Length: 298
Image 1 (cartoon, rainbow, N blue to C red):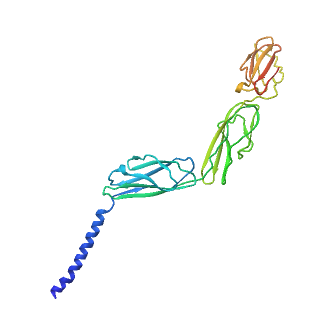
Image 2 (cartoon, rainbow, N blue to C red; image 1 turned 90 degrees about the horizontal axis):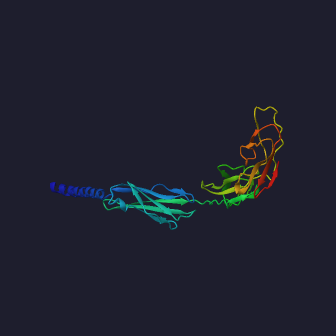
Image 3 (cartoon, helix red, strand yellow; image 1 turned 90 degrees about the vertical axis):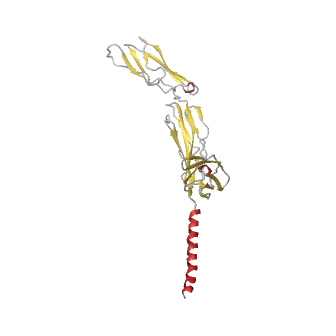
């Protein structure tokens, strides 16, 4: 009876010891490091694609952490840059409208290998092209020539900086007409932006140069100044716009006759002021010359 009791209990103790020993063995072989590949991301065309992973724990050698591609059309993964517990790598050669899967892999100090995957999606969107620069153009209208937006996209023209008096007739049209004023000259930057409903957008710019000048040359109205003088008198002139020198288009004041030699504040400004006037009659001439307008008036 006593012998039978120990014969029954001993096998149970042995089984118990084996289970405890097995559990202890699993714990000793468990990995002692982890990697994190980050969260899935979406990229617009032209946007930098950078892989960023984090490794924590005990590693055999942190330099063995690597990025690789495990899904999607082939791309190029640049040389990884490891800083602290972070490993980054730049991806090039990707195309819009695809899904790519990347994997970060590392080896723990206990010899086990760990990895994690992340999915990057590239969105489809048109690349804006504003067309060719428009240079040395006389006042009037010109046609723009940008590319058309795709399905689910809109386009818009805008000025970067000042417009110099230019105006786009239909900002949403890639081939809108652009009006160049007769009263201003200069070069403006015009930007064409395409925006997609998926949040992507791209822009392209051109420069537009307006030579300027009013085709109707005028020196302004005759003036009769006050009879009251201390010593000398002055006045403001108001001729037609003759240009500011862009591409050689310019207006110039000259003194024709009068009782004294007057002084112009700026002989090339249609709104120049005139001083050093004494009693008498003065004759002035406004001469406009250039590729767009030529003529004179007094």
